[in-house]
Image (tube, rainbow, N blue to C red; front, side):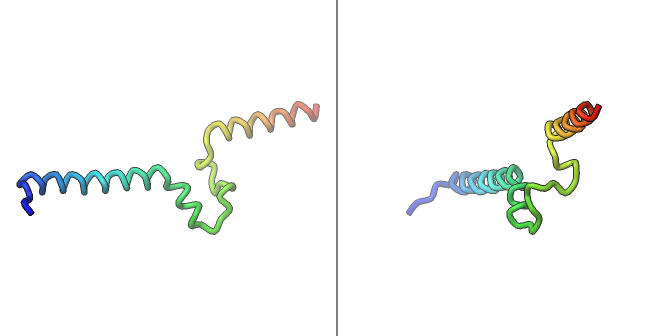
Length: 71
């Protein structure tokens, strides 16, 4: 079987692309993977920085609704 001299470069490019794609997939799903292997409840955030800004806004608006209901 004859291997073209360009095959080595092409094979190296394929390996680099596969490693980069695997890293990008792991990076994008890191929170789901971490929650999969952690013992904590994945629905309870450990610190406020893990919440999205929309969740924080919802929490603030719920607090203000409760305050206005008390008056």
